Amino acid sequence: MQLEYVAAICPYCGRGCGINLVVKDGRIVGVEPWKEHPVNEGKNCIKGRNAFDFLYADGGLKKPLIKGNASLEEASWKSTNTDFRKTKKRGAKFRWFHKLW
Image 1 (spheres, one colour):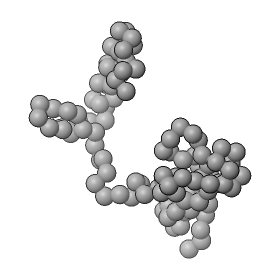
Image 2 (cartoon, one colour):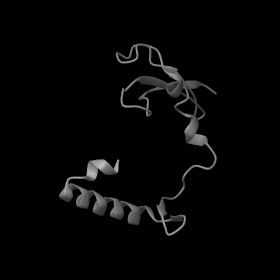
Image 3 (cartoon, rainbow, N blue to C red):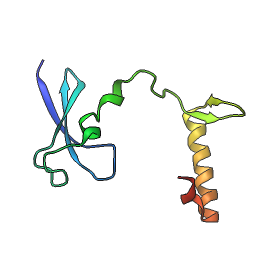
Image 4 (tube, rainbow, N blue to C red):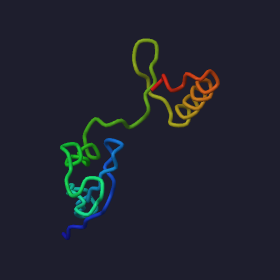
């Protein structure tokens, strides 16, 4: 049961803070600041300190969901990717794709 530290970039915002993932038996068990990283200089915000919690959370998305008539319906990853590409092409064609996000 040896701890391993794996350098990574925090996934939450676009700032690009450095974090060290603490790995025990192949599972991430914590996060520590990357001391020498030039962006965050050895500090992490509250989101960065908890950047691994969502990996093992119950109730996470297992399949993509698409808005149906009255509720969300399960879809395949392939069909969702195809729908996204069509939307992206249509948006780029009419120059309003950026407004979808």
